[in-house]
Length: 454
Image 1 (cartoon, rainbow, N blue to C red):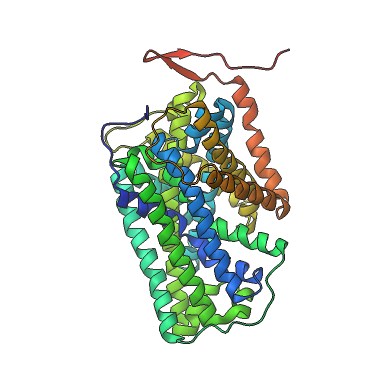
Image 2 (image 1 turned 30 degrees about the vertical axis):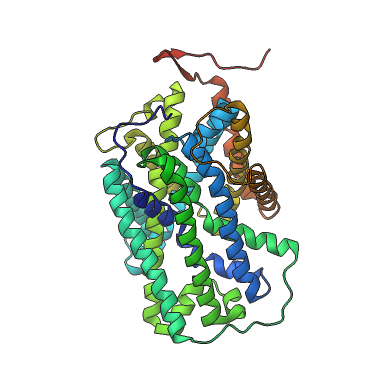
């Protein structure tokens, strides 16, 4: 049972689907198709790898469905790692998520919005993009501090807008280019190229697991979590396949592979300069949608960390009115603003952020997959409203995929990966000196942490 739950559960299954779809369908889908096409070799393989990405996500979702239905908790992955492996990996996961994964993503997305806004109207000289980025973080954080209802309503609007926008692009393309894709006799890519393509595909699918952080706030989560996960991934996979089909239809594989702005090039072919402006607007909406979603879910991990560790106890405050972790949201926004400030001095690009986050992300994703086996063994009598089909083969396959992606992300990354791992390891000294909270008989007691023997 979720010890963090409150009586009111403010999210419906539709709300959760809107949040997850809005998180996943972000700015990445406007950038990664060209990178995937360049490493895929032929048109069939382009569509195939996007379909495989959906299948991999579905396999992972089945594992998460068992965890979320058995252990609904605002801490999500943090809670599963804690139950399966103890405080150390759970603490390091929460530390990495607080300092790198979520806040770094928020800052990166805010800069993207700042760049587009600056192109329309520059403010504050050469710091214009940073000012817009900071204003976006403050605004979206404020929306969610006001309450989950405000955050979820905004997410409904943004998700509806981005899905409708992408479908309109697909429709315009198929109407304007009513011809079949010319399938050329090209060889399939080798293992290295396919691995690189899958990194970008699964990066673009990334975010569906954020549903875990909403599990304790969804009505009838025991039954609804599997519906939320499958419905979200189904919608996302269909849109990604149709969008890439439209790109191949309108541009062809060669032009698609060589373009840095494939969606803008496609719409320029259809509507001229107005089409490029339309895509720019869609990118801003998609970025806002992803930012708002990860602000909602990211604060939940910080809240769970605050409940368990006295050092971060101020984060473990839940405001019942509004149903939101205010302090966790404030800290998350503050760290993101600091990263924006640092970003004005040393700005890094899209690929750098992939390097920075990917190895750490896939390492903890692998641990969550392993936790399915550990928890089945440690807590065999726990109620599991949903049980993974074809166990143990399904979670084994998920773990193998995570291990492959971890290895691939290390091979295809450079100093950015080392920086991400370095920040993760910086949390080790904090864990060794912290004092976790423990509750016995409903009362909080102090527990001395394990420390190395002299």
